[in-house]
Length: 434
Image (cartoon, rainbow, N blue to C red; front, side):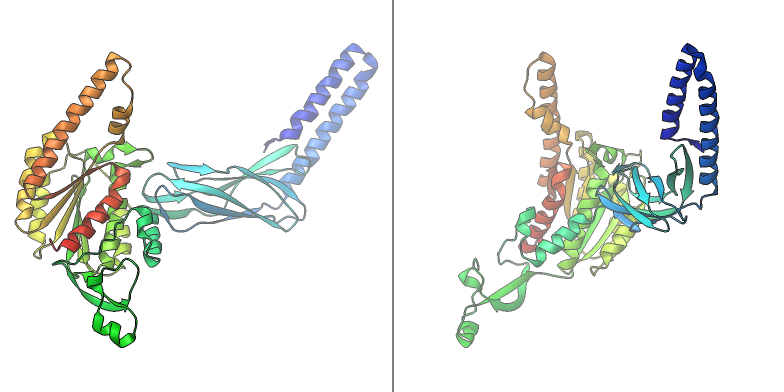
């Protein structure tokens, strides 16, 4: 138990009365009586708080949360006593995280309850635990307050952000994928096969119109084609030290996992099988499987995967994946290249391309664009700008060599990676390269 807010007010009044008693002796008995009265009042108030039935608290939160997304947490506080109480509520959430609307104060009637809500955004994946809820209960006269820990510990899993997958699924249902940058091209090529007949839609080419079906139904009927199914997409995820770099709240590694999750969902919906292998310190392998339920399997495999301080060994990863995969697949490598990686990455790509189609996606730091956009006002600014251009030139040479070797290449900022990967995958499917 500790003094409450009203105790300092009463003490200030009593001290003010003591100043008057010093100046005028007849006030001394009044001052002494007031002191005894305050002491008795504080004792009664403390006894009432001590005898009070403690409140209970229960937390309501999903057992799985997406990284970097705001979610609502509810805490229900129940008053077990026969009198109204005033209580401050604070929840012991797992770090690192951001919260809003904590702590909160609630007035709860006798045998009543109150529910507080606050916003929680985790900043690191893995298994995390919420501690007991901390309640600061005030005495009836607010002279005292008492801390209590209530409720149970709740364990949650922080997964890669699957909000992009949910948004993609929603927009795909309404044929509005262009709103998030996904290009839906209508083109016939080697990689397309007949899917079904349907009513003509604005934008369909005349080559899609089935004139025999049109004459039978007396309305325009189009042929719908789909990309070839039953192919394989396998992700090679770099868990090395460079992936620990951060852009805003998320690391490059978290951006790569979020992008991989979205592309995996798109590929699974296209009828392809999806697998993954982690390299660069953390070793993890999941063979390709089909079905949208594979998204849940990927989440459970990735939620506790973290980058390490080791350097990635591209050749070793390529050798291992070639030994594991017999069927020709699209290998998607997500990493952060430097010019010094040129010789090693080209050797790994040469090994992979003998059996598979390879797409290498390299993450580029956002600070590079910031430096290029910054005005040159001083000599140091000019040096920084020149060094950045030199770095980009060396990086571009590596990517040009990758393209010349026959592999596909992406060099994008982390925030652009999800949509860029999806668009490149759809282009590959439509062109029949796989």
